[in-house]
Length: 299
Image 1 (cartoon, rainbow, N blue to C red):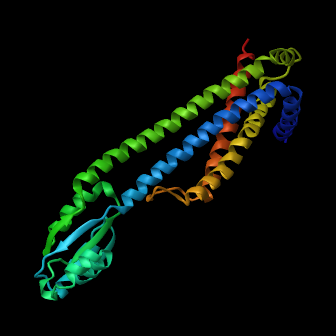
Image 2 (image 1 turned 120 degrees about the vertical axis):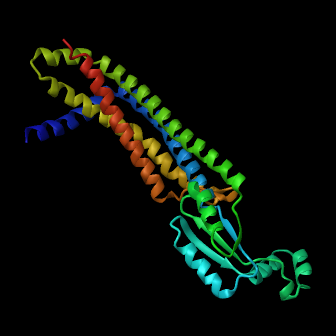
């Protein structure tokens, strides 16, 4: 029970200390808020960029052309073999008649040209349009499909997909690096700000040591105070994250320039980012206070 009493007493003392040292506390909270706003923007931007790449990946399609001499019963066999492949997510079959109708509906010029065709003159081929689970394995999957009897050719824009894959890897690595660097900079700034706050109270720490207080009982109030400063510093960034992102999402209608560049839906995204920001503020505040007060406890 004693540790719990000490913890709750430390919370009470932390709030009193924040009020008593209001100017220094306000400086720490302001620094924490500014750095956490930058981190929040970085996290939201990075996660949305990763979402863009995910949408583009999911949109890549393998178009499988069937040989003209393949009969309807043989199409079922081909479909069954495709269904057995592990990396295939969805299969959409379109006959040459369906393709012709879609192409006619899409353009008046094509309509004028194709309406003169007899069914036996239709040069199009039956196709399977396939989406894969793992785009990184698309080349291997396409090669397996091409070996199926009755398949004429397979097309998925190999050159373009390979360029996309290289770009996606660079983007993913870049966004992770950016988030890590932002968090490290934030940790550095917040810790040093809190160190200045603790430094101004080194006399208070010395008095506590003189009267025989244990290291733990000295550290605990300062660590809790650091946590409280971190929580207060995270309030403004969290408000900006929630209301700012909702406004941004509504303004752009959930996408930027193209349906391929879709923003992540606000819920539960903003709450997840808010929890991350709160956790960073609390942890960094506690670590900063712990490291600062430990310095003055060394004999």
